[in-house]
Length: 465
Ligand SMILES: *Cc1c(COP(=O)(O)O)cnc(C)c1O
Image (tube, rainbow, N blue to C red; front, side, top):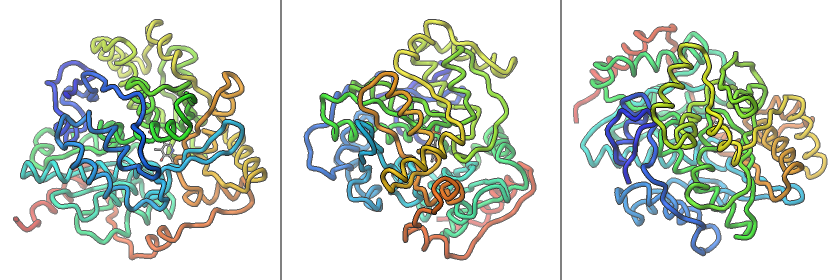
């Protein structure tokens, strides 16, 4: 299996190259040259999430690793999930289900991919005798998942940048209480956009990038998408082959829902893919008008979806334009020059065949959280609530079974949950322990040079192996 870039000007890469690079050298995103076909999971004992994961992911790896080794790797990754079912499916209404993806160590679905990504990277670096320096920016959940996944890994340094004073206490402590030497939490005196600009600047400096072997772990990394296809399969298998469920996905960077789309291209039979957005509704507007146009970000109760640039949408544009890299390049040039691009009508029509988008307001999400709590006693997080509203709306329109992806544990967002239901969710023991350690962080000015200096000084002081 080889990978091509959505911008068409990068050499083909194998899985391991795509994994370590993240972004293709021409600035595009890696896509598999062809889609492996798998219409359903082989019958397997219940609770066998790791077996399903190895089965679904193996064709993407081109034999490196093979299925047996991959099975050992994913078994180790998912062993630490608190629910024996890993991704349990709960009924919350008539033909309406919640797919709980928050039983990992940091209580959000990001653990599913990050735990696998860190192990695949460590394996690849060992094989090649290389080291890498990961630099990432986070507004919360990604950083927590990355710290948890990469702590103590050989040959990998993780520098994670977050906006000083602008993330929740829980999110900050999840990053700053790791005691391992390879983890570096850096608070930047600026906004999330500033932290992202610093990361971009460091990657844009070719000499620095090569000298420190920088790699990226944000949601454009293909390995993350592959790991996320698995739970679409396990959820569909639980409902039975006659079901063809639709999926409602709380969406920000379009990574999680693209994994659902990838599953459908692999032959998994499903209904519709519902893009659930909050007030930051660029994708809902795009599906309505055909114009992709970022506007200012408004803060909501579902911060992990407060995004106006949905990076993985580029993958959808590439696939649904018949893999037209010229078109993708023109769209990205338009976006830069004019602040928007227009989808060709044929591409828009193809996207609408599979996807529906629903915009959900803060009040609608809170009302749904309250209603579900009153009916069932269940507490959902504010991201999941957006998914529930969108999923119900789509179910009213097109019928059928609806699976809502529950992307975070409600204990991560106590303020919004308490406002909606009058009570907070119980904090799981593993999170309580995590939050008690001593915090270790550096506060730096909003300057790429300051961050570069910290990375360079650390590299210079590292004992040579
Ligand atoms: C990251 C995240 C999302 C958005 O997922 P994307 O893959 O970026 O679309 C939704 N909910 C939660 C809780 C998240 O952490």
